[in-house]
Image (cartoon, rainbow, N blue to C red; front, side, top):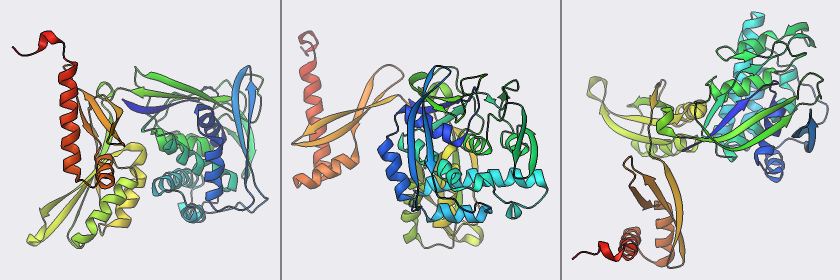
Amino acid sequence: MIRSLVFDPFAGISGDMILAALLDLGLSDEWLRAFVGSLGFDGVSVRTERVRRHGIDCVHVAFETSPEHSHRHLRHIVEIVDRTEASAQVKALAQEAFRRIAVAEAEVHGVSVDQVHFHEVGALDAILDVTCVMAAVRELEFDAFYTRPVAVGHGWIEIEHGRYPVPAPATLKLLAGIEITGHELEGECTTPTGAAILATLTAGKPPPPVVVVEAVGFGAGTRDAPDRPNCLRLVACEVAAAGTGERLQLLQADVDDMSPEYLPAALEALLDAGALDAVVVPISMKKGRPGARLEALVPEAALAAVLGALFRSTSTIGVRHWPVSRPQLAREFDTIEFRGQRIRLKRVRLPNGETRSKPEYDDVARAAHALGLTPYEVRNAIGEASARAAMDARPESEDPV
């Protein structure tokens, strides 16, 4: 089963609404405050409270920041995010969301991406919204993201450039390829920041027809609108991988001008950035030169982060990637005790209903070190103990004659 998050923006979406709904789903207030504190911004505090929107109990969240000059360019925001202590994957996702905003604004105003001035979305609270959301979905261990149609609203809004129709032109561009609705709702329901986060994480994918709901969270907008419950609904759920044809990206890059001793570090960087698996394969390249092919299996939500790690960690100047499906067996974890050491067992269920299990290597290695044994000895001892337990559990009628 794949832990998934479904966005249900029936009344719109913004950065603070997403973060608030994640808090309602179980994200810890203490974790959020600690993460904000680790980002290195001065004079920032987080305020959360429970509110009602048309009878729905929601979380509302706001950042309190000092007044500042917020007319930034994309490069300034990239630098700000780079200076934080967030993980490489979180940084890449946050920067990708702002890159999407810059591209949309550039197309609307007919200028280059480098010339785009971030006004409202360049403010510190918007940077915090985006960075905290990207970190929070990793903290809650979501691996796949989907969205229902996005309510956009109607009317006019006053922004830095003047009076604009709702949805704002850049917001509409950010939602290209994503189903929209809610044209009868009054006012701006979806902000550029909310649209950018949604597009970056979900790429507009609709939820699969069958999910197992785990929890529901509601994040409140600032206004208590008269014509709707002004909140965002997020649904934490599990999706059967084999039933959904899980879509991943297979990345591939070839290098022949890089010392092999640095390849293990490159693989580690890809895994740290969110790749599910990464390998190196020796190949023969142009003019008979020996080379290496790096391959990584990547969830679509982590694509930007893994691409960034690949370019930073290797000498490659190009990469290929394409969508692939990965049917996988349903799995669950148990914990056993072996000579005072706790070891996780991964159990999978085969299509015929049978199960098989194996101990997690990291736990085996840790136990071996603590007990003065080799991992191989620990693995064999666990296997023998499991076999004896299975024999003892058999009914007497099944004993061999």
